[in-house]
Structures are given as C-alpha cells and as structure tokens.
Image (spheres, rainbow, N blue to C red):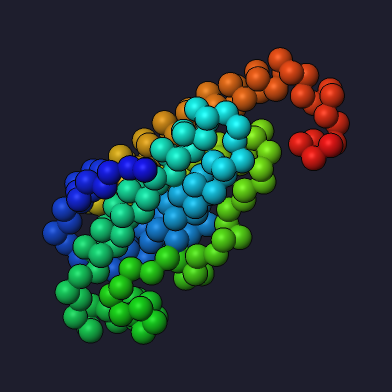
Length: 199
C-alpha cells in the first residue's frame, strides 16, 4: 500500500492556453509509450517476481508512474481550460473537442485511444526487465521530442522533471536485471531449466 499525498510530485502551474501543444503532450498520458501503460505494465509484472526487492521496485515505480500520469493530466487540463469555440477551431482542437469536450482522455498524439496492447507482462524476469528498460527509454525519447517542440518554461520544466525520472527508472531496472541475472546464474537456471519456468 501507499499513502496518496494530495499534491503533484512536481508543481504544474501553467497560465497560458495552448490546445495544439496539449494534443502532443497527451501522448504521455495514453499514448504507446506513456505513463498509463508504464504504470499498468509494472504493477502487473510485479506478481511474477520471486525476488521481493525487485517486486517492490516494480510496485514503487508503477505507483510513481501513476503520479506522472496525474502530472500529464494536469498539464493537458491547464493547457486547454476555458477555451473559446474560436480558439478550439483555430488551434485544430475541434476533433478532440467533439469526442471529449475538454476532458482529459487517454490517447496518443495521433488520436489513437489507449490500448493494453501497448504493454507486456510475460512472467519471465529477464524478459520483463528488458521490456521495462526499453519502455523507460522510449518514454525518455518521447519527452525529448516534446521538449523539442515546447519552449514555454511553465510547460517545459515539469516535462524535464518527468524525463529525468525516466532515466532514474531505467537505471533502477538495470540494477534489478543484474540482481535477477546473478541469482539465476548461481542456480544455473538456464542450464538446468532449458524449457523455462514450466519445465
């Protein structure tokens, strides 16, 4: 369990509206490499890990990703609040508006809704940790792409914070992978279990 503090992990205080910017930032809410997929991936994978430290790490990072989802939702909301119908049409937000009004909906920048097909939970510790490391790098790249397009510091600063957390998570998953690999090597796991965990 965890305690929910009713504040964002990093403050989001945006005074401008920019629905065009919101349309690509929302990709980190429900896009293919976004925070929703990350949280569901790690919180699902943790159950298969016999190593309690690694299972705990997956739980910790999975819940932190929920906090990041909350931050991205706050950014998108603040960029789109109080829009006039003229602003909605002028900035190309009309298609989103028709389906979701000004609600925050899990989708990618392309408009594709979130799908569980974005994540994997295989039950094999090596496979899952490599998946997690790759996921963190893909999220970091998406944040890099967003920062290429966003120059306003009110928006860019929380995005930079989130980008940095992806790097930290990548490092933690690398440490977990080394720990799990060493445990398996000590038991000659792959030598004596050629068919995997079901043999």
